[in-house]
Each structure stands twice: as structure tokens, then as C-alpha cells.
Amino acid sequence: MKFQRNRLLLSVGVLLSVFVVGPSYADSYPSRPIRLVVPFPPGGNGDVAGRLIAKGMSEELGQTVVVENKGGAGGGIAAGYVAKSTPDGYTVLLTTSALTISPSVYRQVPYDMRKDFVPVGLAMTTSLVLVTAPNLGVKTVAELVEKAKRNPGQLTFGSAGVGSGSHMAAELFNQAAQIKAMHVPYKGSGPATIAIVSGEVDYTLTSLAAAAQLVKDGKVVALAVTGKKPSALYPSLPTVESGGYKNFEAGDWVGLTAPVGSPPAAMSTLNDALRKWLAKPDTPNTLLAAGFEIKYGSAQEFEALIQSELTKWKQTAKLAGVTQQ
Image (cartoon, rainbow, N blue to C red; front, side):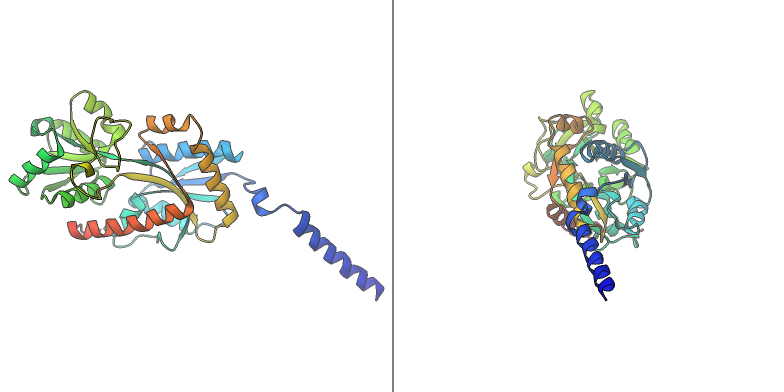
């Protein structure tokens, strides 16, 4: 009897020691490398953003963050993969506006942004720039809109492909300006931008970084940026919204999400590392060189953004009559 009582007391003591003095999950996390799954192939803007985040967070966490590229299906391959991954805090998805557009342009996607992921935080944004071919002869957004209204359905706009960010941003602009134009999809933003230089199409919305040298060389004409405020890369350009198109905003944003069920302590640790890296004095210039600007957001703020973007792009695709693929 005494032996059994002593065994019971010993067992209780061991359990108490685990809870009282043993390390918590938050204290031990991360204990091994973290995978950052990027839904784009190497070399593009999304990949650049992912590698900047991985490097910055590795320094803050004291643990390696490894980039794993899984491009294809508008980001769907990567998102579907992460959605099915073990929710242990060691697999994270680089989440961009593309993943809130795809559900509106594809009949089926292998993920549900509302159900399959938990937000970690928002990191950065980048506006697009509205550029026209020099031979179009317009210098402002107002002149472009006036020309389009005088020639309904005659102007052409290029994009990186049906359902791409540049396509949907252009459709949103057309809707805000109440103009009709013909969509010409290309296989990527590079060919779409080159088509502007050659005058093959009349206008497009492209990344700030991609257009910078072309604007400087006078090969394309920049009219406005699509963010809520002017860009540091184009300080003299107005925003589209300032031309009277209220509540117009388009572009790309980049943040992190993880599979639903991931430990809250791990998500908090990741968000804290993200926030600290973004707050470093040299981070703004590092991001600006890649065409991005800091836009930190808490998990709650990022979740609200994702919800609003899903709604916005669904409505935009419906009004534009974008055929689901």
C-alpha cells in the first residue's frame, strides 16, 4: 500500500515538473528550419518578396527559413499543398493578392482562403503603374478615359494573362472609369509590357519595378499609380483615385498564412519576427529596391484584408464577364 502511494506521488511529481519547469511550445519554437512555400517560380516579384522575407525572418528567429517554390495554377498548387500540410508551425505560405483572385477566375481551386488558413501577418505592398504606348498621345488618366469614351471598345489593354493580377486590376480600372476596351492577354507581364513599347496595345497596368527604366527612357508613358498614396518610386505621379475614381485601389500585397490548426504560439512568434524585421532601419530601402513598400499588419488586420479582397475580385470578375477557366 505504501509502495503504491509512493509511486502515485512520484508520478504526480513528474507531471508537475513537466508543466511547471518544462519548456513551453513558444519557448522552444522554432527548433528546426521553417519552410516558406512560394506560389511562383524563381525569379519573379513574388519569389523576390519571399526570399527577402525568408532572409529577414531567419535573422530574427535564429532559425533558417527555407524558400520552396511551387508555381502554377495562379498560386493554387502551392496553396493546396500548404492547406494539406501538417499544421505544426513549420510550413508557411507566402500569400499574395493572386490567391484572392484565383477563386473568381477558376471554376475549382484546391484551397479555401476562408477555411484552410490562419493569418500570420501582412508584410508589404506594391502598387501597379498605369502606362500607355507613346503613340497613343495621352499624358494623363483623364485623357486616356476621354479617348476611350470617344472610341468605345476600340482601345486595347494588355495583361499577363486571363485572370492575372494585371488583368483584374485593368478591369477594375475600366469599371471605375466606365470605359470599354478590348483585352489582349499575354503569357506573362514581360511580354505585356513589351507590347506597350511596340504600340501593339494601348495601355496596361504593370509592376512599378518592371516599368521604371522604360518610363525613364521614354519608351512608355506613365499616367498614375494604383495605390492609395503616391509611390516612392514614382513620387511625381498621382494616384488613379485622385483623378476622381473613388475607392479605387489595386496592386499586390504580400503576407504569410499557415494551415488552419497551426499553434497560436507559433503564429505569434512568426508575426513578431516579421514585425521586428520590417521595423529595421535598412528594410524600407531593401524593399523599395525590389519595388515594394512596407505595410505591416497584424493577423487580424491581414485576415480582414483577405476577406475584403475576396469580395472585391469576385465582384470585379462578375461585372467584367471573366469566364471561369
